[in-house]
Length: 181
Image (cartoon, rainbow, N blue to C red; front, side, top):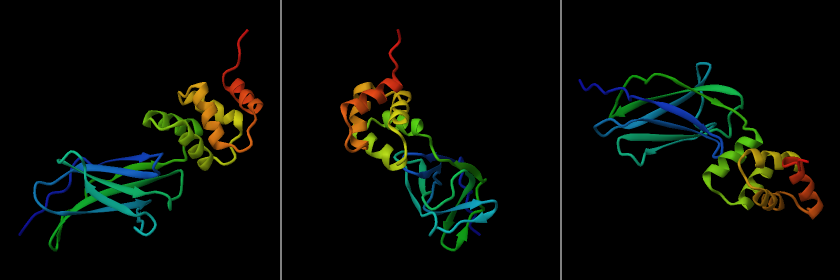
């Protein structure tokens, strides 16, 4: 009888930029494959609705899995768990770990993209794609609160909005960085 260990130290986070759950757990010391289960309120969710990609982490002692959340409902808490499979035998499931799928605010996206070190033009395109109805003033405020400079905010606005005038950019920048007297 071969007993298979339960995978340990499962953690899960939501990557708001890549719109996916990221899972990590300790790799077992012998060759196995892994199954990941995603559920909501005890009901398993099909991999057709939330594709799962499992692989090795850069650190050889860890496994990593990515779950595409684009087909899931926002503002819900999902549960994930993992088990090992060897031949026809399966380990018991790991403890469930909860992970919340949220719709990020513009400032959260701007801040994360700043931390990721992307270009201002990419931020502009990404912000407009994610928030198609955001007005210029709110766009500039999100950029300011996301640690972007005035210059990079102006460059991002040029990527996000068509037919911008210099006055449009100045008004948006003044809304975000008012001149104090």
